[in-house]
Length: 93
Image 1 (spheres, rainbow, N blue to C red):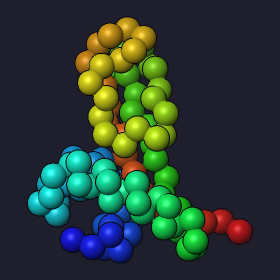
Image 2: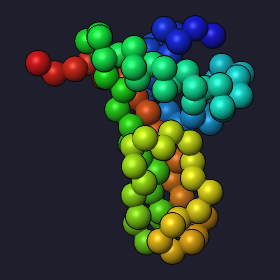
Image 3: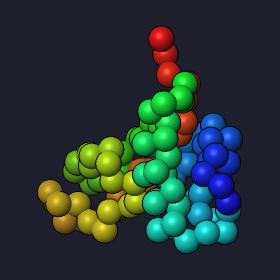
Image 4: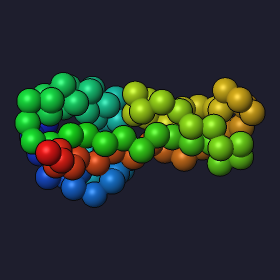
């Protein structure tokens, strides 16, 4: 899979695990591709928008730099977490 193909795939929000299943690649490879894509998109009309992972118990929100699901919440130590979701959108203005 080519990184440019991620732009078309990410028109709708997806998690790294969903992308990996869709393209049949390991999640680690997808995460690396997304990190590279973030740098590449700085020079285009698109931007990668990350909806951060969140704890479903206490509401703790992880930073947008975390692209894969964390193992546990640092605040309440539960493993009941949402996966971060990524989407590519056109930059405004």
